[in-house]
Length: 115
Image (cartoon, rainbow, N blue to C red; front, side):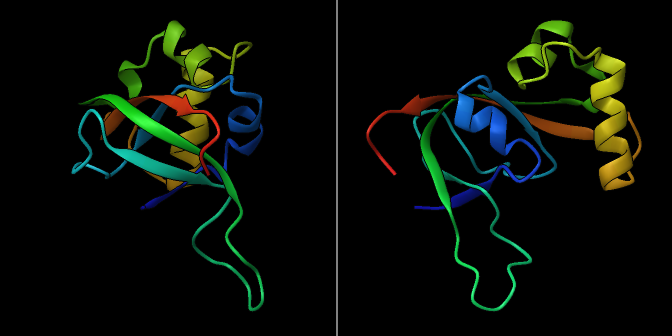
């Protein structure tokens, strides 16, 4: 099973307040696919191990510009007190990308009892 990192939103995944994620990739995903959510999968230091958080099942995927995010999706990303502009700015700052860059909007559900 593939690992998908939630390094920036680990707490939201642990709290199950996130059921949408945006990625600059993962275009191969399709509804019904299952992937393992992990805390971090790249940049592990020597001796560090991947920490599994959950298993998720993909509900839908679609391309859209990063700055097309709605207030509802900001909440679904796990940031109920943020505006869409704040969310976009966080990703623009982190990835050093243009706010109009196309991303993959991935909707998922948690598969209970599976890690």
